[in-house]
Image 1 (cartoon, rainbow, N blue to C red):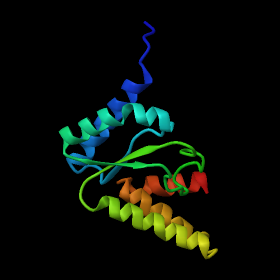
Image 2: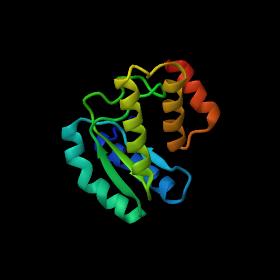
Image 3: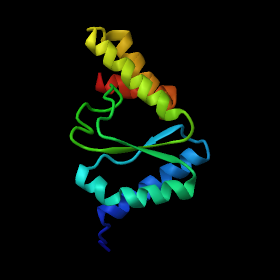
Length: 139
């Protein structure tokens, strides 16, 4: 059988799963799929309903931090929902600001660059070995 799954439902299903993982503490921060701004406009109301049901918060990120965890173009021109609880958004935004400062000073290289990626990986609750593997594959 070859059944089609519509992309909107698939994206919301993934978001629902990540929202539960954040709610129960398996993940500190989760990311929705990266989608076009128009696609995000179409699904954000249902995403907010899911977040409310799960007791988590959403932040619509239009400029996702780029680190060596993922290919640099993974979210270019796309929007992502950050799924979190508590002060996690503050931690993410502080990390993004720190990276911006390093880039502006010409210091976003070597250990400093890897450290930003590691911190982002930890926010995403990735195991250290996975963080290192991702950095090595994308650096």
